[in-house]
Length: 112
Image (cartoon, rainbow, N blue to C red):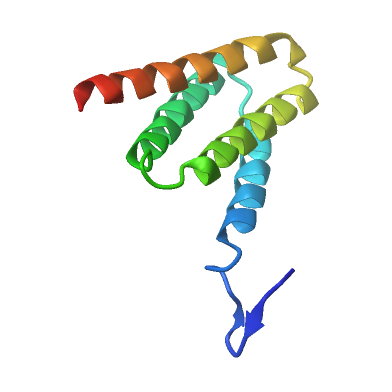
């Protein structure tokens, strides 16, 4: 449902759905454009570290939206990776993402 006021589209009311679609589309496009495997792996690692930081910072608050946005990124990235006919390394991408996400959360928890 699109909420409009006098100025148009209300971003604050629909921030979650707008960011979900934006992250999904951008990660899909990013995976299609980048051909080098090392760059793909480094992007996945960097994204996992950033998302783990956001999840850790909102541990007391509602971290559910950030977890769903993390899933949107990895699903879009793997879908773009498949569409680019490089379907052989999707398990490596998911393993790197999950491993660095979990590892960063553990390190941030220990550093507290």
